[in-house]
Length: 568
DNA sequence: CGTATAACTTAGTAGCCTGCCC
DNA sequence: GGGCAGGCTACTAAGTTATACG
Image 1 (spheres, rainbow, N blue to C red):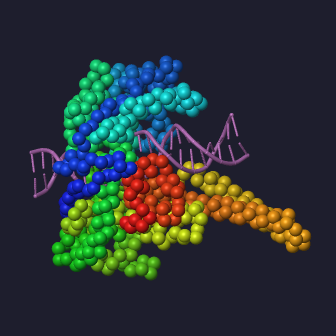
Image 2: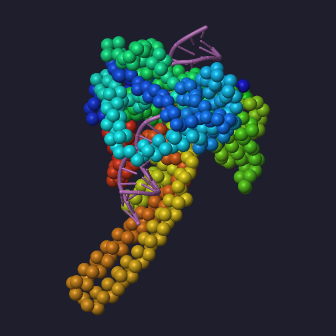
Image 3: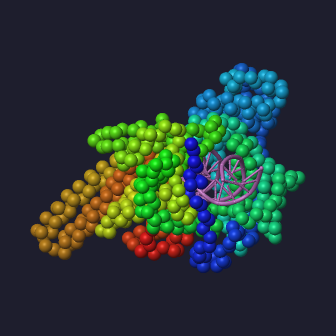
């Protein structure tokens, strides 16, 4: 039995909210009936540069003999050569998929010769590309076409939507290459094909100046759908899914949506107790489906798990979420480490990131899990307008930040210590949401360097203290102005060094605790920015310490809107 | 009404860039 | 002025949810 959570929560689109007023830029009325915009004009996408064949001295070898490849086959070979250092190219599935797709690009003569990937030698090509990228590094800014890039950005990187010039997020078409799925992906290594103008659908206003396809080519279609937000779309050949060009997070259309998302989460705050009581009730239901739904919702709420939609087997890596968790991902312990009714989760979630957690649960939940004989957990009933599974993640993340900030911030602290508190609150959320990262390659080393600095600072401090002591003794003896002043300045020096030392120590703690945890994802997607803005205002922290330029642009609405008493 | 797919958000990382230290 | 650490951004895969469709 599998019931998608999508059907269980009733989803109602949020209609008109008030205008999005950021510095009075947005004065238009909000549209109704699903209209997203009234006017949209843009220049279309920027295509990947055409393939530039290799110089003749760069050779591909088959079975030890140099071989000149046709341009089509050569291009695909370069994709592999560029990835030669990557562990991807050692994986069987990757090699198998690549070889199969590569052969499709070969001429019949090439196909007849090249029958075994093991006999292919790409190392000459690989060296060539390495040298190229070294050469590029050595180039000056002008050689690197910085100006040209800026021109392209200005020309193609913006659009006009409803009288405002808006930044586009991804105006470049994805270049061809070899597909790199995450985790154990069955399609890794497949050829991601080059996108041509005839693959492209343009979306813009009827009354706008339409983007021109490159000379001698045609668009697949030009449409005028103001009920969607994308400007350009094409179908990708690996999964057959549609890719879009859309606006930057700083745009009105994204900002409003983001704001709405947090407003929905705040509405959940108002009724979350009721919902929690209800799912507790539902654990006792006679109907198995209702009980299981209630258990699933409990985990979505308590552990901030994702919904876990069904996915097609063999098309993607085998990853799961709450509703698609299988019996092999859960272990039940009636008693463990002195706690009763312990559940151990161990599975791969989104992006094949491991979720591991061992948590005590209520007896009823445990009993329900014991009776789970079929494959999937199920889901929940209609509880609140606009409530979907991911709202729980947003809600729990934001409320956790708010609580942690209250708990951890000490108004006596200096700015770096307060920022450490902020980062710790942020970290609590990242842990809840299981946002991980690979430990930076240079982690151990940079940690050591920092420790050396700290040691040096400590020595400096004890020296300064000693000097202060002798200055004091000196002043006591002489009792003149000059020696008093010397004491004062030594005192200040000690203070300054103490502060510097503390700053370094704080930095070390922060970095150590952050080794495997990524803060960015929660900051960007789960934490109501108004909480952070309010916190900054309350404790006199410059907003720049919390949000960089891009983030300030994305959260312009919140920076403008929230004062220090904002409550999520 | 249920499924398929379009639309849009969330995710980690490669590699560039900047600014600091020596 | 060169090297390197760390921050930032671009990129695109991988989710969830909304909507279309038969």
